[in-house]
Amino acid sequence: MKEVILCKYGEIVLKGANRGWFENMLCRRIRECAAFYGNFEVYRAQSTIYIEPKDEGADLGGVFEATQRIFGIIAVSRAAVTAKDMDSIIGTAIEYIPKYLAGKRSFKVEAKRSDKSFSYNSIEIAKLVGGALHAACPDIAVDVHTPGIVVRVEVRELGAYIHAGQLPGAGGLPVGSNGRGLLLLSGGIDSPVAGWMLAKRGVAIEALHFESFPYTSERAKEKVVALAGILAGWAGDIDLHVVSLTKIQEELKRSCNEEYFTLLLRRFMMHIASKVAGSRGCGALITGESLGQVASQTLQAIAVTDAAAGLPVFRPLVGLDKEEIIRLARRVGTYDTSILPYEDCCTVFTPRHPKTRPHIARVLAEEKKLNFSALAADAEETLQTIKVSAEF
Ligand code: ATP
Ligand code: MG
Image (cartoon, rainbow, N blue to C red; front, top):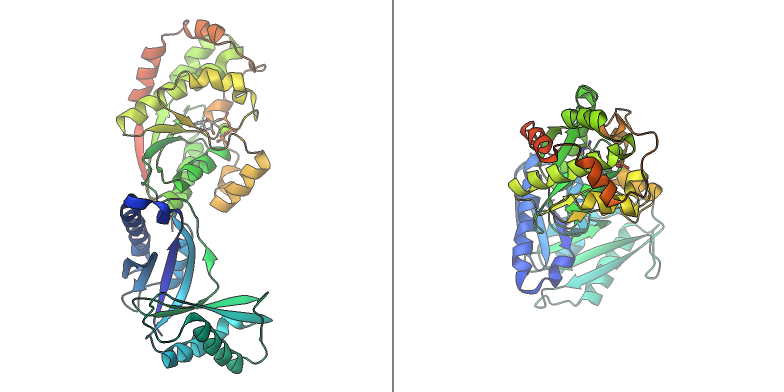
């Protein structure tokens, strides 16, 4: 029996004149993912994208799972395809659907006829298919109000499709449809989730990680590469840039008041990230900050670090509690990697009493003790780029 995957998309249908452009973006992303699983044709008709295997070797189950990580899709189903006549539809339903009904107490059939030339209307289709399925599986009741499972029959332009068990997609907009952002990626729990949230809104992701070798280890960097790989499973391939802050941190320790270490370091991060973003065509920075979570994330501290950024800074987690972020991290798949206990550059030379309500004038006075731009420029020279591919 021939099977395909049907992908339904949400917000894109509201895009008016730009709709086709968004649809093409989404098709391209689906093709990219499907290519990992073999030979597929991806095409669209009537607000649905079809993924059709072209040979025996194509792994439909693999693609089905992967589609749940493609932003822009709101629902996916694996469907049997048949000719647009009532006998074939009933025959296919009886053959294909019982495995989905197993273990369920009740079902109902919903039909949709977008090909209006089909000679049965949707109520008739639902009745006929429902009756035939009930005859084939008499132990499973028909319940139109609270069914255990909904069987759907769609008579469309290109054929008739029968499926049960539509799964929710990732939602959002296709990656790349909303520009490019530079994610400040630490090895922690928050920043990968922040990147995921912006990717969900269509932002293509590049990442920047600051290390402080030898105070931070090679293993800490490998962990960040692994996190970028998991994120790439949702956002597509990621260029991960790594910049060393070692010299800056040593200089801070030598010259500045300890209370301001973290704030000054974060201002360096924002400044360097803005430069990297500018040279890579990224229109915004993305961080995993959440208001009040740590000393450097108070309103005043964020104002001080924000002032060093030359681009808009998106902080999609700003209003989330840690528990909510952890829940998202589990969904993204980064949580188990994030909690591996390696050091981050922010955790070396941490002040015992960081300023939580800094005055910008005091911070700038501390910063004047250093040659900020020369130190930042030296750090930029250390940039290395790792190409991280999606792990499917
Ligand atoms: P995370 O869990 O993302 O590490 P956090 O709660 O530990 O966040 P901070 O260490 O204050 O908070 O970092 C705040 C944000 O600054 C991070 O979410 C991340 O975007 C960025 N950041 C922190 N450390 C680094 C780093 N080593 N490289 C790149 N970005 C970093
Ligand atoms: Mg951190």
